[in-house]
Length: 534
Image (cartoon, rainbow, N blue to C red):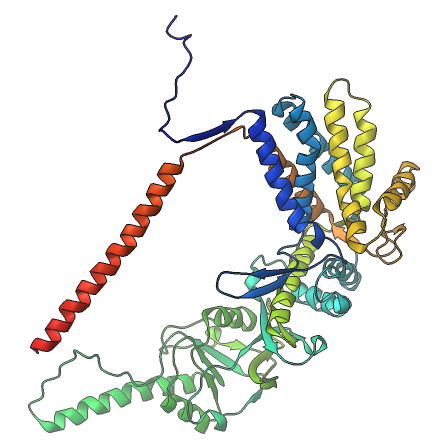
């Protein structure tokens, strides 16, 4: 029994650094607050952009990636900031974690209570409401000046894929040049013209109601392998080998024509012989189509990718109302529209610079994710910090009914939620203290649950009336994720690291690289001697 009561002894290597206790928790909190300070200024429609320069010399102008991520980082940082004084005063982190999780559940229930459903409305009404959600997301992006134009485009694209979860069914093609307004949506598939051989220009570039054959085979004469060996006893036999090769390729081409398809697409190469063959028969072909584009064409046209041209039946052929090859900027695009199974859409983005188009694509990705979530969950809450202020008011009020230290912790959680409207004001250059006082007064009156920051006037306004909405599931996920992140950081109270082992690993990696370099040099030397002997 006495031996069981003895304390555990942990032996660490010499030079091992260990940090634990209150100081370690405070250090973790400070590190997280530093991360939050980096992204703080990107929040909202007046948020600043970040110029990111990587080690390869590439630059990216961005407001961060994924809608709601800035909110999560800010909330988590603020929860930890509010927890820091309690940790320094000796409060056990588990007490804070317990109260924060309770407050999180209360906040989520309040969001569900305030949320407004858009279910039961007609498709056109629902599309208008979804466009408002998309416009709210895009207002903080680089393309915010054209948010109505792109919001409608995003909603049409998401509605086109219906309930399918595969995000790659919405293709985004980038074409430098032109203005943002030159961007357009294809209710179907569009992809850049692939490499083509002689005879391509003689092929038709437009079809009405064509049949489409999708292949995963090569349609060209195959060159022999370097080590192939054919022994012939009669020169006439050589001609029979050559004829057999030509017969094989012509047999494949004949079967493609007999299938009734007018458009042939293949993931592998379609050679010059096949290109000219199809051109002579008023057919269109494209080889080396990417796997992603080929699958999207299959999903849109109802076709099935074939690995053989034998026994092709009508059921495996796709179809569309209209096909054309169109000039877009300096590129040519193959466009399939009016597809019967159009569970796919393509957004062709135009813009003056590559960096601008890249950021526009990231912005559209955020809007697409928001609209998909709103379409699936069909409830929205007021944006502009309105829902955050309402939850904060509710939690403050609820905390007064709790006895003990937990009252203080839940009150600090409520205070942390005010960071969203406060940061919106700071990023827009408004007096955050004045605006927050107005919001607190309005929400306390019991009639201002929908009131948030008016980013245009610097005052407060009804966010619902101004169509500043966001899906309730996004806000629920943001508060959930931020709370869990904060609780995770608070639960870490010790870090152990061994600088010597880290340096030893670095030296081992360096020696391994050097060894590979020496081995490579030896191999080249042996190869050189072999060449000289021959």
